[in-house]
Length: 283
Image (cartoon, rainbow, N blue to C red):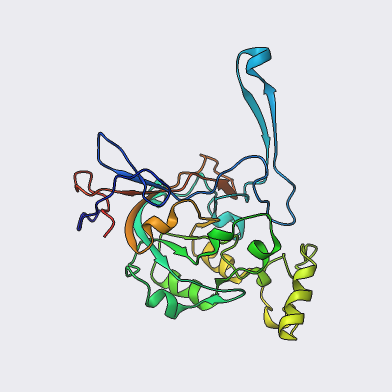
């Protein structure tokens, strides 16, 4: 792993990271908080968390959780959209502890991330990198139609560009790798969707076009990446701004669940200014 460059950090905070006093490693939270009232992807049931044992009655706290794994900051396995693809517990561990980049690609409502954006991003996206895309939409993470339905997404060409670079994993600070109007949020696919019936209306009112005409493919970027064996992480947040424009080492281990289609993760960026641990310094 690369050990070039230095950083100076030590302040505690989301964007400044937390420095371990023994090793000097700096950790940045890249996840959104998970729990009661975590924003749920439209079409999925609400997260249920209840206490089955309490300190007052039992002297111990135990919780019961019911959730679809596609909520909060989570990783999608290739199996999610590629039949016979790898489940989260089958993906090699080195995919989830690896070097890569956090790139700034600001985008507005319903815009596409295109190959030119990736080509011009800094630091340069190299073969085998974890690629984290900061569009700025993590700032609006909430239970809102705007966050889920008006965000940008990867174009087919951008997904193909990343596959050609043989990237290890792709993460983004929106609810979906794909453009939201190319998902079941806004269009009908087989027997599902649209889950947000207002979205096609809003799009037609703004553009005069039908969603199905402008977005004829269903989740194309998702499917291309899955078929190429590239895991994806959605709903990146936390202190991602603090490492944007840097090379980092990333940690995001899912459960050891061989047939899992997705898994909620604690996504972390790690910097090593000393170089003693042979992980990225952040330059």
